[in-house]
Amino acid sequence: MFTIQLNRGADHRVLSGHCWVYASEVANEAPLPPDGSIVKLLDDRGRFLGLGLYNGKSQIRVRLISRHNDEINTGFFHYRVRAAWEHRQRYAPSTDCCRVVASEADSLPGLIVDKYGDHLVLQTLTLGLDNRKAELVKILVELLKPAAIIERNDAPVRRYEGLEPVRGILHGQTDGRVNVEVGGLKFSLNLLEGHKTGFYLDQQVNYARVAALAAGKKVLDAFSYMGAFSLFCARAGAASVTAVEIDADNVAAAQANAQANGLADRIEFRTQNAFDLLSAAQKAGETYDLIILDPPSFTRTRANVPEAARGYKEIHLRALRMLNAPDANRPGGMLATFCCSHHVPREMFEQIIAEASADAHHHVRLLERLSQSPDHPILPAVPETEYLKGAILQVI
Image (cartoon, rainbow, N blue to C red):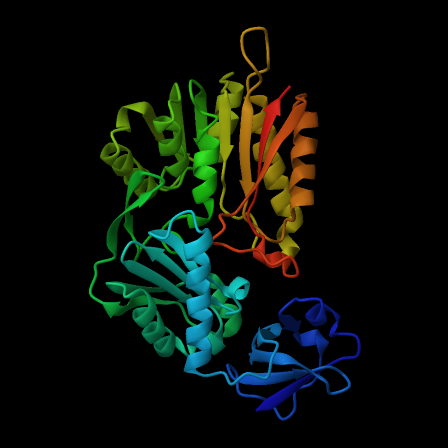
């Protein structure tokens, strides 16, 4: 087994519980390990730190997979996947639809497995685990007995590992179409198409939490994707729901889901850029009791954070100006807002909201902080695993 030795002092993050080693932290990688291989990680004095997946093409040179001198074989991966599944059986809001394996959060760096009924969707985002894809598929078939496993390895992040985009069927026969139930609502999904693995499973808990605020309210759901927040709010008794989504295919899917759940007459769907709608609606003097902001990530790199911050402030400023002010007849409007970029920490996100509320001349009260569903675990020592930040605020 090849070894990677760190610069003096570079072991601090690893010893603190983080699992990434950057190229700049490596003192010695000669002889050069094959990309995708398992390497021993040593500190500057030659002391053992753990075993990791190596890739010389990536700025993240080593991703720790074990802090013990384990034998990395089929039994090792079987144990890790089984442990991840057992965790979901204890804590996931639903095991019919859930994230079964969440990469570093389950000590399987780069492996994502999502479950939609009897279908699994797999992503191998690191070379080390992409090389073991066939082995991982056999383990998943043995443990979860799916009807089909679909590969959605078309995530842009794979290029940092020198991997090409690919999608297809790894096990069973399927056209990718499944009907599932999330929180008692029916959704038709195409797992071979759509964003990421087909659905935002990390919002499962938040769909119900936000919907609990919607009864009797005029609701605007910006960036509505396939309409999950809209459907939950309509079912909860919202007076009206407007769902805004720029992708016509997603709007069509959301309309079909609303029809399947008997909610089509309660939701107005608009195929429109949410920024444009917020701007036009604000100028027209439209107001709402509850606005939901759940945009896609505005940045996937640290370098673009300032630009992303401006985008987040803009949508919050426009949304806050459209919320009803409190009066003798009604409480102030509410904002349920989310950020899914790990490059924008919660403190920054909430500061952006505070600045937007000041510019909108609205004082707001933070009612609740929200996060990702428990089937997307968070490691305190690896802040990148806490990527979804949310908040519920009210104008006072």
